[in-house]
Image (cartoon, rainbow, N blue to C red; front, side, top):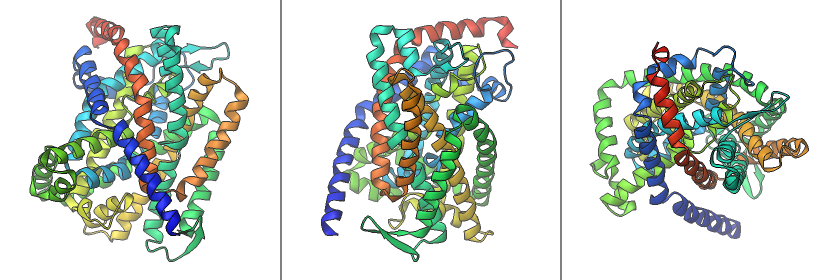
Length: 484
């Protein structure tokens, strides 16, 4: 047992070292700088035209080519982004980097909206539709069709890491692990009903949850994008609204604590304040605490909203639209909803309750503790049950969305060999099945590594093609007919 623990610790240590390199200062600067650069090029479009974007979000375009409606494409994208990142990811970011991580998460999301706009725009501009009406689009196609065939190697690198992110990162391990952890935390927090698996005592609730989620995943992913979109259109809006209303209730019940929480968040972002003394001591001073807040905030923010990763344009390419700007606007609302609304509410709730500072809690247990404390007139178990329910459905739809993304990446890598894709679907289901038995720290570290590696080829393409985006976007909004 001790040898197993030692080996596990060594593997976790190696993964952590790789993660520190991938998500070091250079990548953080690159991602934020790309968002700032694109914001300048599109003239702050994410702020100036947010109202128009929200209007387009719920109004489908008539006569456009594609496989699903723009709203369906957005829900597919949101199904992949609204997941454990909004509930577990925010908690782990604040626990590791202090309340200031939320500040940097919001900053990265604000600039990330311009990045997401650019991704959605390019997805439509450079997609192709075959004779069967099957849409081929995403970063690999705007790299190949926009930058030229000499850059296919970069598209292949993106597609490879896209498969890895889906199979071993955001798509499977983190989501099902978060689902199983939340169910166990609610029903069997002390592992009273456990069975020994792989040398570890695993709660029966984890085992049963893993089996149920695996079966449900298999039933949906076999149907492809149309079935995934239909399921997402029902689940995502309903659960997002439920979670939003529940978080609003918590914040209203603790409205007098908001000013103090806001001070903690801003001070923590720059390594200051008494509340983060533990973080500052662990990080080696004020600068270290600031870097810890920035690294965790940006990394978890990107994990949650996926701005810059290149995942959202894969779904956006399937939208029934011929309007590049319109789809870009719809795509960027995903980051607004995911991070600036949902993640902010989760983070604010955790800071208000002080749950992030409890060393005995990790992952979803932090958020559950915050919600249990935050709404005093509810039995804590009611709050925890609602949160568990939201996380389960959020994470499940993320599993579905990332199956679609990673399949598209695999299609590109294999020149659309359907047999390979069919086999991959079952491998994906298998990854969902084993996800609950991995440790939380290892799961999130693996996801972070592949996220960072996937982002790099996409960012190169976004910068290279930003001139075309800027020209066509500015022409669109200078057209009097488009101002209505």
